[in-house]
Length: 248
Image (tube, rainbow, N blue to C red; front, side, top):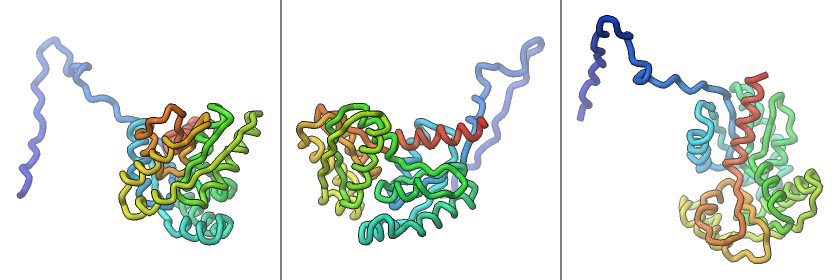
């Protein structure tokens, strides 16, 4: 069905001796735009998650999404170092497209991305989460749905502990059945499986959801142990980096 044409708005003439427009009814000024911030993903499922966080927390931030699923697939088979050249190429693509900052949202390859020099800041999404976990307590349990994420995340938690001058005891648990659900498109089922694993954790001060794909589980847990995930604090750090460049 053809939509009805939109009629142009009409404005009543101002009364004599009155202001031509009422400031209270004037449209709000447009939100200033800043960026662009590029996000390197290894799953297209992350795009709506970060778009929603941008809309809620950082209106005006221009996001540009790059997705390369093969980066994670190969890193799982051969190790993160095997994709260093490909990560550099994807980051260079983002910079060539105008990115002021790049945020890597994959925890398996985050350390590779973060150390790569491409002329703009490259951040890993899980570093702020790791810092928050260390600040919460010394007994840290890292949950992941792919085994390749466990070692890089534990290393990051320990690095943040050294930076903060704290000691931590990091344990890991693999929720391997959840990843199959995520790959099949059952993100709700994946979140429920991760939440169940989190609720089963004992003797911990904080639970780390190692992958951005696990963030939905944070709101489904019933445990009294604090649960942290990476997308919101990671995007906030990247947005701050972009703002700093604009202010400078």
